[in-house]
Image 1 (cartoon, rainbow, N blue to C red):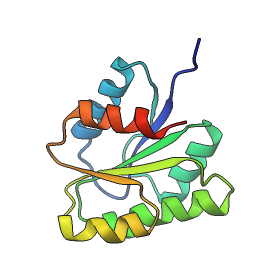
Image 2 (cartoon, rainbow, N blue to C red; image 1 turned 90 degrees about the horizontal axis):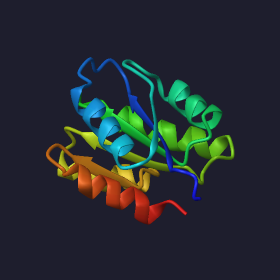
Image 3 (cartoon, helix red, strand yellow; image 1 turned 180 degrees about the horizontal axis):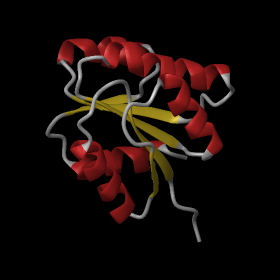
Image 4 (cartoon, helix red, strand yellow; image 1 turned 30 degrees about the horizontal axis):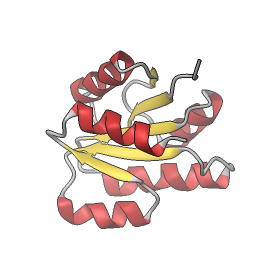
Length: 130
């Protein structure tokens, strides 16, 4: 039997709204993935460390506060520095289309903006996790 995909869902920065992250976490769990939710107000350092400690294959970072440009790239960079560049990093939340190219260049594999179907996120993860 295949091991389930392990996903860490994190709320980065001072953003105090986590309903969307919880919906995603539950949807991934219902799709058969193992999900670890970090809770609110996580730093990039805490997110990267938790991802390594929990031996996840995917990190999903959520931000509704507008701080995604400052919070998402350091997670990818820290994972790379710690030898965990094989962990897929995805982001979501209220993110302007104009910011997405920069985030992808900075190591975020995909960005899911508000309103993205959970089925699309599940499919993306399944397609990109080896």
